[in-house]
Length: 86
Image 1 (cartoon, rainbow, N blue to C red):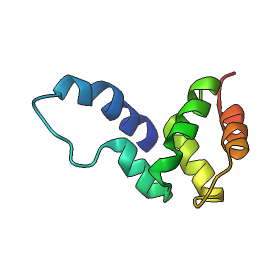
Image 2 (cartoon, rainbow, N blue to C red):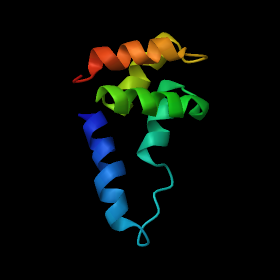
Image 3 (cartoon, helix red, strand yellow):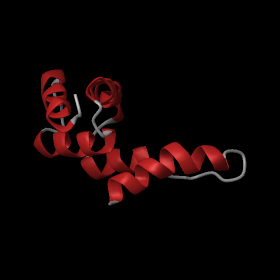
Image 4 (cartoon, rainbow, N blue to C red):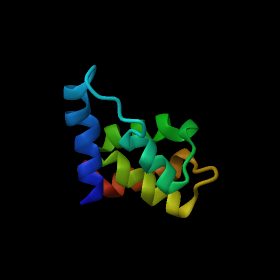
C-alpha cells in the first residue's frame, strides 16, 4: 500500500535518519505532486485529517481527484469525516 509506505517513511524512518540522510523528495511532497495539489492547501488538509483521524495522504489524493485547483474547506472536511475513524 503506497500511502502507508510513504506515511511510514515520512513519520518513522525519516526522523530516525535525520542528520545522516537527506531525502530530496519527501513523501508528502510526492503525494502533493501526484494529486496536483498546491501546498497552500496543506494546512486545511492536515487540520481535517487530524480532527477526523483520517489518513492525510489518502485525503489529499481523494479530494484532489475531485478538485485540485481550489478545494473548499467543506469538501476537505466532508471527505475527512467519511474516511476517518470519528
